[in-house]
Amino acid sequence: MNNLPPGKGLLITSRSSWFDLNIRELFQYRELIWLLIVRELKPTYKQTILGPLWFVLQPVLMTFIYSLVFGRVAKIPTGDCPPMLFYLSGIILWNFFNGSFLKNANIFASYSHLFSKIYFPRLVVPIAALGSTFFNLLIQFCLFLLFGMWFQSHGFPVHFGTGLLFAPLIVLVLAFFSVGMGLMVSGVTTKYKDLTHFLAFGSQLLMYATPIIYPEKIVPESYRWITVINPLSAYFELFRHSFLGMGVFDGARLISGAALGLIILTLGILVFNKAQRDSVDTI
Image: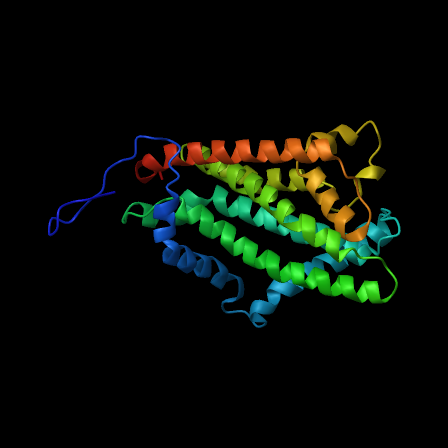
């Protein structure tokens, strides 16, 4: 946007660069980002009996189901780690990644009415989608810490110091992947809308390829390549290694995963900026 002389109004021009990341302009729209975050959060508990308690109940219920199905029925070992902590640690991270990915993947479908009527930096929407899922993560992470303190008081060694040191890095890299992958998918689905039907299926496959319901070390050697090439695996394992004293710590995979996440985020922004120019005509 360029300011015209006083009294002449505001001129909005197109951007020539695909990688349009105007931090200053995004900061100027911080109030809109907050409003969109609230807009994303409200449907979660609007017209519900328990309201915001669902932020807490959802991971607790899923942890209980996973402990029952995968722990007692399938008898997937969690080592010396209490199943409750093991499954909860994977669930809260997956909820963050998957929630951000799906919201960003459906951006054009969800916000086409705004894109076609009013100007604002389009990257405001992915930031808001990430912000709403990060809010969920904060609540569920506090829940994980409470469970951790309870188990710690009963003799299980939960490493809060080491865990809290690595937690920001883990969240940052998962944000890179979720936003980048989501934006790339959103750019493709503006032209090929039927691909949206594969989102849930693809997300489910990725979940099973990530050590969420099982430790990576129990995967047979003939299949372990699946988790090794999955860049998310190293960060789920790092989270458990940091807080619970279990899991694989592989520095090379962590560094390469962070670099790949940054590349995917960059590609996602490129695809998104290219697609949003024609979104009004194609949605």
